[in-house]
Amino acid sequence: MAHFDLVVHNVSWQDEVYDILVKDGRIVELAQAGSSTQASRTLDGEGLVVLPSLIDAHVHLREPGQEYKEDIASGLTAAAHGGFGQVMAMANTSPVNDNASVTRFMLDKGAQAFPYGPWVRPVGALTMGLLGQELAPAGELAQAGCVAISNDGLPVTSTELFRRGMEYAADFGLKVIDHCEDPWLGHGGVMNEGAISSRLGLKGIPTVSETIQVARDILLAAYLDLPVHLAHISCRESVELIAQAKEKGVPVTAETCPHYLLWDETWVVEYNTSVRVNPPLRTRDDVLALRQAVRTGVIDILVTDHAPHAAHEKNVTFAAAPNGISGLDTALALTCELVRAGELDFMDIARLWAWNTADIFSLPTCKMGTGDPADFILVDPDLAWIATADALKSKGKNTPCLGQELSGRVMTHVLGGRVILSHQDFS
Ligand SMILES: [Zn+2]
Image 1 (cartoon, rainbow, N blue to C red):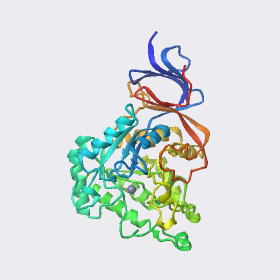
Image 2 (cartoon, rainbow, N blue to C red; image 1 turned 180 degrees about the vertical axis):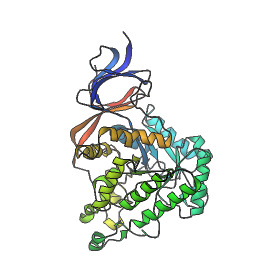
Image 3 (cartoon, rainbow, N blue to C red; image 1 turned 30 degrees about the vertical axis):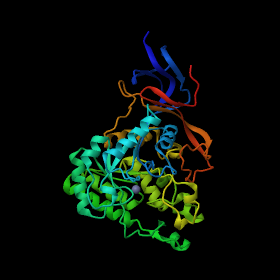
Image 4 (cartoon, rainbow, N blue to C red; image 1 turned 60 degrees about the vertical axis):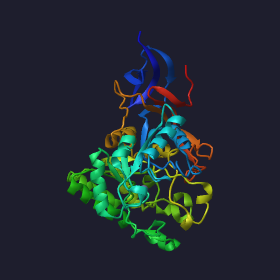
């Protein structure tokens, strides 16, 4: 009888129940449940759903430079618990990740903390220091291990420079991720511009500050026939522009975050700084447009835009608070909420949180097929837990979920056939 390294019994996959057979870091087979096998380790998957280990294409890990908010080890701990086997770390660290030594530093820190994953996938800066003046060395960054290029944090205002950046990154097979924001239209804004911002006396950020850059990027991608990936899309008009562009065959891809699918601008009325985020939470109509866009594929992937901050930084007035929501710990539970609401199904989770992401950024993923890397999570989609400060593994507790009951938890996380985290008993 064949001997396996790991067998997970009776786990649900695409509404059927299987045994997952793992050997040498790879899936041997999804076998009929109840198959008699020998294995070094076995797990009971009864009542659990298997999903590919998730990939987050947009996180801020804060190291180097702002380790009091988060460091690579704490960020990866949150990733492991949250179900993420790979996280793409943005370049707005201090120093900025605009050269190979910073990229290597991040990779080394990740490997030291988690030698078997989760993996940091650094994103190199588009411009030196993110200052929008001169291009960073994309070739050097690619060679050091960067998987994409982005100026996230400080949008590039020079369209000429952005064009050269798209061309330069493409020479090395990297995609540019753009944070779409016109820095003048939204200048000084802290929430969505509209009736509620007027009533609260807070300066608004109009949707057009996003859409004008979405349109610019789409026109450039079409003109150059080069890909561009649009970060954290927040509104209906952007969705419409992306849908039109895709119909015409423009090589554009896009992401949004769980918070834009669940919460709207009314969450700001209590001046809760944990919902201060950029782009801001928009209207209910935008939420509905985004939900449809992720279902239909107009929006390709989900990301957290994980942006941890220290408590004292968020414990100020709404207008003075920094932007960002800590997302790695809660993303899967929030996505399970959308499944319970009938908005998404588990195959959508696999597509939006892993397969499409792997496709766009040329990363490994598990499709549960024979020979695939055994990178998967066992999820109890309905298990309730309280998002206490202790339960959140990120240093950043800045989420409106803090103290709330959430449902949906990673019970076991397997990477390369190795159990990197489990709340289950083995036999
Ligand atoms: Zn951004």
